Image 1 (cartoon, rainbow, N blue to C red):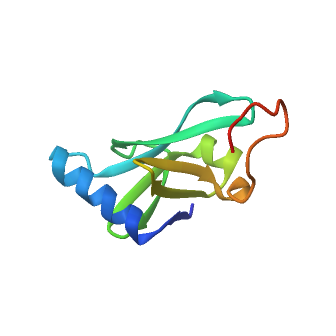
Image 2 (image 1 turned 45 degrees about the vertical axis):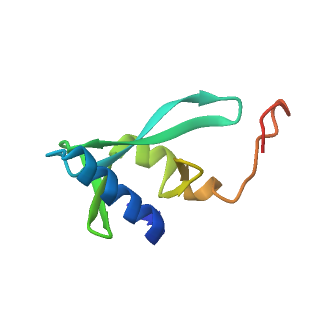
Length: 105
């Protein structure tokens, strides 16, 4: 597993972990739902579980269920406009979807 995370995003995650004083220090990548263009992914403070894959970037351990990784591969995470964009690296360069044309790009 490889997680692509820029320095600004690493800094923001460290800030959030410090603000929340959470004993959990892992960031889980998970599927939070579906949209017309495919799955939506998010991140949450969590702990590693048996069978998870891990990757350490900037002192932060990212975790993902092995099945989710097998389906989507490596992920890119970026903090922008007050939120985190979490996308599989294989689709990070695509913009919008082609199914309905109603999604904002």
